[in-house]
Amino acid sequence: MRGGKNPAKRVDAYLFAKTVKMFDMGREVDAHQLADALEVSMRTSWLWLRTLHEMRCIHIVGWKKDTIGRDQTPIYAFGDGFDKPKSKRTPEDRRRKYHERKMRNEQRFSTTTV
Image (cartoon, rainbow, N blue to C red; front, top):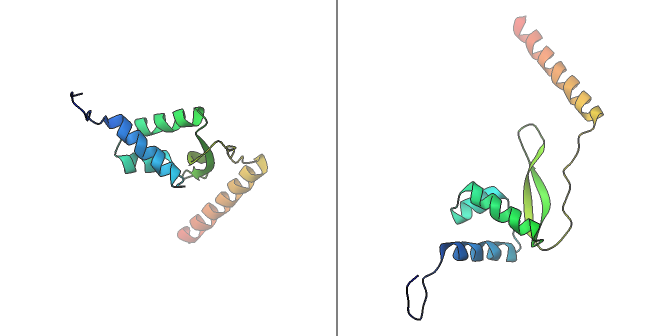
């Protein structure tokens, strides 16, 4: 830091202020969006969100699904609210999906071999 009346801006404080401003405007943010908006690494983004969540400054309002349908990435909003739990797939759902996929594959292979 340099001396004088106006101290140099610290990058981490500036980015933290931008993070708080994003949440204060009512945005719902996940780690990927935060990393892109602030141009920080994913590791930093996850660290900040986890810390804010542990301090009960933000809460989970939803989940982004991965390619096979599991809840993977939490979406956060400002405030101390209840976290939305991950959805659970029942054994019946898994069995039904398995048989649907099996039927689609059988139909695809039967039409290509004829």
